[in-house]
Structure formats: structure tokens, C-alpha cells
Length: 589
Ligand SMILES: Nc1ncnc2c1ncn2[C@@H]1O[C@H](COP(=O)(O)OP(=O)(O)OP(=O)(O)O)[C@@H](O)[C@H]1O
Image (cartoon, rainbow, N blue to C red; front, side, top):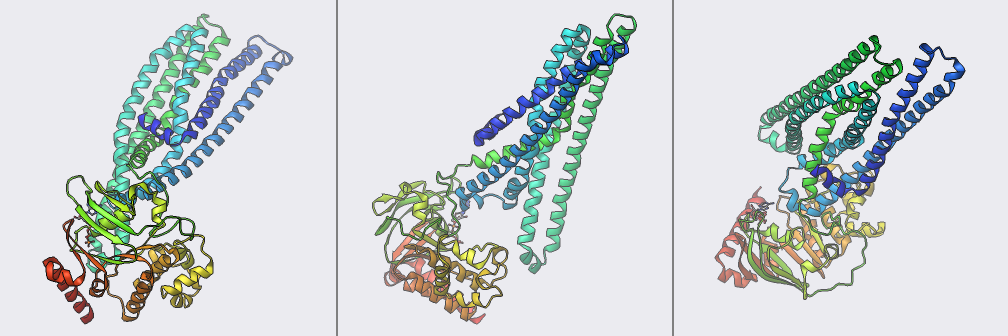
């Protein structure tokens, strides 16, 4: 119930839809009493009181009208429920995606992508039967039987008492079924998430697994989790079918008891035929909502587990700004915002992912506009964390970052990100056309500007040789491009964005000579007139830098230019030696 309230808080309009569905459902459900009343009147009038057609014509007409109204109300309710479910799914998927984008890579790195995808696809899908069937039925099961009970009680006290005795037994059985199904559905959901994650891992890591000769082990792991999933599915379905069967039987027996009691009293002349027939018609209707609820129980349980996970994701603290930023993508314009700065000062910043170990500790340095800063350090030194902070995917725990005189945290994320272009080591390319991929740098750019950016990134030539040029679809993650080509598309995005600060994670993987020359050339071109912060992996980049920042185990180990660091920093000397060795090995193949 708590989760349900939280979900309704996320989607307020669902409340109104649900209220209308429940009101219409209650009216349609209650009309059955009137319908049964008229039916009993007509049947007892014709068979026992030998009434003529003219005498029963008005109640018969009324009966047909009620049946028609009920049919219309039920149809309208189904339409409304499906509409609510459809809107809800679209809304929820958008919210989840926006939230995950907003929480940024620091969040997704700590989660299994397969599990997140499962929640966005399957979890949101499970909201459909939950909202359109289970929830309205759960409410109607509380309303309609109560109304029918009071009508039966007023019409015939003994039958009312039988219903009163049978109801707690039925409710107890439902509660038992609910408890068993609840625990099993949770297991079922987590087995589904584990299976989705395992499949995604296996597909994404296919090349690595094949090369290491481990594909069979991974296949048997996938087989194992699939088997787990099959078993939990079977268990959940067994419970669902069994509980549905028990409830069905209990409702049938209860109706039969009322029928026997009414039949006996009718025989001994203790009851009128009209009352007996009316009570007999109402008794199954009393149990009908609960029976229907039992058939929707499984969908309801799956939905409520999915709701829990969805709320958990949505409640993960995320930055206030929910702008959608993909790599260095700016949202709208190429126009520079009226916002200038000449320095970025990092003052004693610290950050920890888990609240225990510092990924960055007490780091201070300054980035002057127009200069090229190289960031170096051994693996795990905190370079990527620093970049994540500057891209505002995470905020510092301690210390401050001043852009000019303004604290970075006070600048709206979207405004700040318009100032920054990010060229990662492994750029993410979407399964879209080349033009659309470059255009992520600036949505409103003209085609000429896109081509110009591609030309500056030395990408135009190879693009023109592709079958459909700029309109070629490049496959998931740019599967149909080489590493160097993907890198040049990413650089074209950065050119298109025209941001004053470029953050660059230099390519380390081996590129062929032509690709390497073109990329280095493009980077040099990109650096002109801009401030550059580069996670350097090449000797030449380090030597070219105006300032070098050396990080080690999250701390600032040294800073200065090449000449001073060579004399003063042992760490720097060691890093230079390791760069030299790597590059020599690369050259020697
Ligand atoms: N999402 C995360 N959750 C928890 N710890 C993390 C996370 N990302 C990084 N870390 C830890 O923070 C520290 C700094 O990592 P970071 O990725 O910033 O280093 P790096 O210098 O970029 O390393 P590399 O050169 O290998 O990419 C490491 O100890 C790493 O294990």
C-alpha cells in the first residue's frame, strides 16, 4: 500500500483515472442487484403467478435496459483502464529513463544494465495488468460484496448469515495465497532480472568470451540462470493456479450452501419463490468479485514487485536537473550562452563512492582558460572521477569548484554542460545515421555545419565513401565503424558543439598510422582557442601540455610543467617511463 501511494505520487493523474474506473465498476456491479431483482420478478410472475406478457413487459424492458447499461459501463471501464495503463507505461518509461540519465554514469556503473533494462521493459509492462485489472478489481472486491451482503441480509436474514460466516474463511484463504504468492513472486522477479543481466553480459562480451575460449562456460551460466527462472516461474504459477482453484471451490461450496438452505426453506414453504430466486441469483454475484480478484492475483503480485523496484530507482537521489545529456551533447542551441569564465579553481575537493574509501582526497589545482592541462596518474588514481565531477555527473563531498567566482554547484547543470564537450576514449555511437550521431553535438545545427564539423574531425572523407554517406545507419554502438572512425565521429560532435572547455580521454588502443595521424591532427585543431583537460596516455600529449596534474591514489601527487616535474617528481618520472615503454611496445606491434 505504501508503494502504491508512492507510485500514485509519481503519476498524480492515475488517481483520477482509478477513481473513475472504481466508481463506474461499482455502479455496474451494483446494477446487478437491480437486474437480478427484475429477473426474479419476471420469472416468478410468469411461472407462479401466471402473469401475461403485457403485465411483465415493463420490468422485462427495464431488465434489458439494465443489461445494456451494464454492458456499456463495462466496455467504457475496460477502455478507460486500457487508456490509463497505456499512458502510465509511456509516462513511467520516460520518468525512469530521465531519472537514470539524470542520475548519470556514476549510478549506472553501480547497477547491472540488464537488470535496469528488465525493469524499464518488463517492470513497466507489468504495470499494465496491475493498474488496468488488479487494482480496480481489488477495490471492487471491497465494495460490491458489501453492498450485495446488505441487500441479501435485508431480503433474507438466514442467507445473509451464511454469507457472513463464509466470508472470513474466504478472506483467510486469500490472505494465505497472497503471502505465499508474494514471497514467490519476489524470487521470480529477481530470477528474471538475473537472467536478463546474464543474457546482456553474454551478448556484449561475446568476442571476449570467444577469444578466451570461455563461451561454453558462459553458455552454461546462462543455462543455469534460465533454469532458475523456469523453476521459479513454475512455482509461482503453481501457487497462482492452486490458490485460484481453492478460492473457486470455496466460493462454489458457499453458493451451494446458500442454495441448499434456500431450497429446503422453499420446500417447507418457509420462503416465497421470488425471494428464494432473488437470493439464489445474488449469492454467486457476492463471490464473483473475489473470484475475479483471485484470477488476477498473479498479475497483481508481479505488478506490485515491479512497482517496488521502479520506486526504488526513482527514489535514488538524483541531481535536481533532469536534462538529458548524452556524451558532450548540448540540448538545443549552438549559440554560446551569456556566461564566461577565465579560471576553474578546484579547492580541496574530496569524493567517495561508498562513503568509506576516497576516490579523490583533498585535491586542489587551477585550470586557466585557453591552456592545455594534462591529467596523468596510475590506474585507479581518480582521473575519471575528476572528469565525472567536472561533467557534473557527481558532486564533490567536500571542497568546492569555482568557475570564475561562481561555485560550480550553483550553475545550472544544463548551462554548465553547454560549456563542456567531452570526448571519451570509447565514444558511444547510437544505432542511427551518421548525421544524427554527429548532430547530438548540437540538435539545431544545419547540414552544412554538420559536414563542416565532420571535415574538421577528418571524418568527412570516409563518411562520403559509405553507401548512404551521412545517412548510413552505423549499427549498435557504431558496430559498422572502426575504432578510429568512431573516434572521429565523436570528435565531429565536439567540433559541432563549439564548447569552450574540452575534456578528452585520449585513445590508448592501437590505431593504424593513418587513423592515428588524422585523429591527432583533429585533436590539435580542436584544441585551438579552447581550454583542454586531457586524460593523457601519450608521451607527446604530456610534453605538449601547459600544465601537468599528477594524481596518485586519489591525491594530488604533483603539478607543474614537464621540466619542473622531471626534476621534482619521482611519480612523474615513473609514469613517463611507463608511457615510453607502452609506446615502444605499440610501435613494435
Ligand atoms: N562507480 C564506482 N563505485 C565505486 N568505486 C568506484 C566507482 N568508480 C570508480 N571507483 C573507484 O574509485 C577509484 C578511482 O577510480 P577512477 O576510475 O577515477 O580511476 P582512474 O584514474 O580513472 O583509473 P583508470 O586509469 O584505470 O581508468 C578507484 O579505486 C575505483 O575502484
